[in-house]
Amino acid sequence: MQHSASLVQIAIPLPLDYPLSYLWPDSLLQPPAIGWRVLVPLGKRKVAGYVVQTDGQDRSVRDKKQR
Image (cartoon, rainbow, N blue to C red; front, side, top):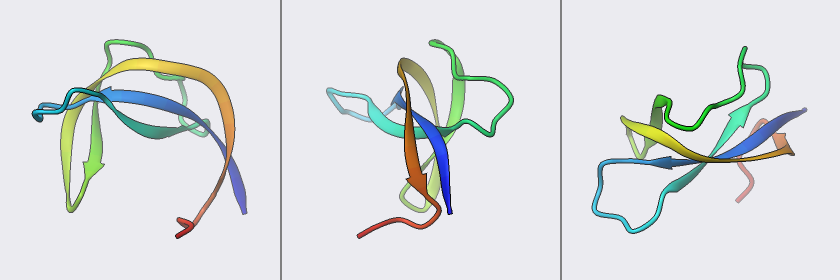
């Protein structure tokens, strides 16, 4: 099964020089806005971060991760 999602860049409080990319499912009520505070998975935990960029493009995403 495939779903549509947008790529979102999230800045998290780690010593990184770049934001991390996450898929934002279109099934959520609103598209992401720059500056929103969000919880994202990072390893086995969830961390708070901020949306710093959205690409506005839809991507076809499978339910299960492809390895």
